Length: 237
Ligand SMILES: C[S@@+](CC[C@H](N)C(=O)[O-])C[C@H]1O[C@@H](n2cnc3c(N)ncnc32)[C@H](O)[C@@H]1O
Image 1: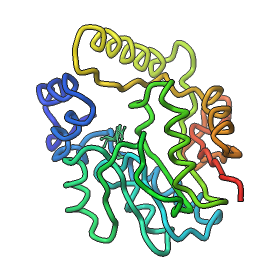
Image 2 (image 1 turned 135 degrees about the horizontal axis):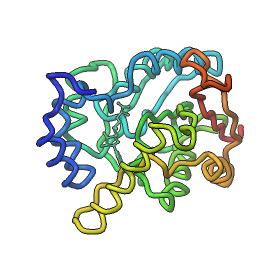
Image 3 (image 1 turned 90 degrees about the vertical axis):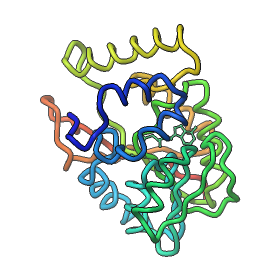
């Protein structure tokens, strides 16, 4: 899963015993060599799916990390792509890797922008938000979008009950809950806290209309359904 350039087990353990923000500061120099960075093939499919929904002029990558998604935003946004993250370490790496984008250090739960974006995306970060924080997060994204703006993010099909990924995710979340019961500061990262049955109505209550676009290029499950989809939430025009 990890290459030689990636973090050692000891480094990952130290990261996991920190806060989310400080943990990512520590991981930042090696983050791009971990499987946690969103792979290019996912970014490419998302870009291809979003392009016909445009044109877009200004895009925001929420929880941008080292900027994988922000770079992809640059391909579809005419004027500017902005990445926002609360880890200074991750933003330092992003700044060094992608010259054209703009970087802002801020908490996604309090976005410091006027409604100037017509596209917002987010990749691989929702596990860092507790379910009770989601309505606030969605309201923040809604507030920084122009009328008619789009908030889009890829979602994976939930693993089949009893399958290996099902048990792996369950095991990870249980271990995190135990860790967070006994250790401060908490490290919020859960795999099973983002069910679409809850996310859909929360986005609608935030003022979005929501649709799911299948990302069939990322494969199909045994029953023929797509492994992944792009959730597209649009703010009223
Ligand atoms: C798994 S990384 C994903 C990075 C990038 N989006 C990618 O796909 O490669 C999660 C990122 O979310 C950021 N993050 C987590 N909670 C955040 C918050 N409340 N506000 C801003 N950034 C946050 C972390 O600092 C980290 O850079």
